[in-house]
Image 1 (spheres, helix red, strand yellow):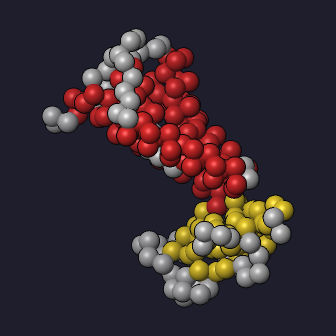
Image 2 (image 1 turned 180 degrees about the vertical axis):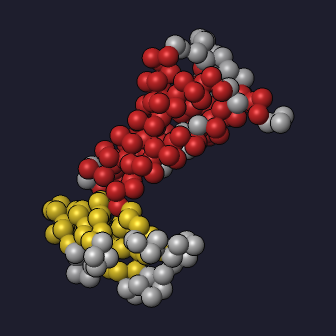
Length: 212
């Protein structure tokens, strides 16, 4: 009970529609941006956040919370950035609320609460590479990287969340001889074959990838 009082419910309600839209938009945008530029954007964001922490940069409380439109737009930006760099939104929301004269404890508590709509929107955006078979086994498409190259890979999980070691090679199906990643996937319900689409790379040139 004592912890609930630190959550500004009006802020959560005001930002949630924008958060849902922003995280969905960010997931779709991230899947269409070349990975090099996405990596540069992520690195710049990490450096920016690190500098803020090292210098203890905090915004001055110089205004009040905006109206419905302002809260929605803030939610859209927060959701978009959260989905792009895989954060919960606190890096944006806490400084924003402090700037809007919200006490630190309330800003932190409210930021924690908005993690739920951020997770829901982001999951919806990235779920296009997740499919569930008729036997409730979960198939996930993505890519594996060793830091120098990426390979498309499919992972299958049991209904309880454990890796299905009977699928492919210890639960993984890899695309040998191809580099790239999977951005969308559907299942052939008759055979449980995964039909995937994504991106590939051939000698530094990005290309399309379609496989069954």
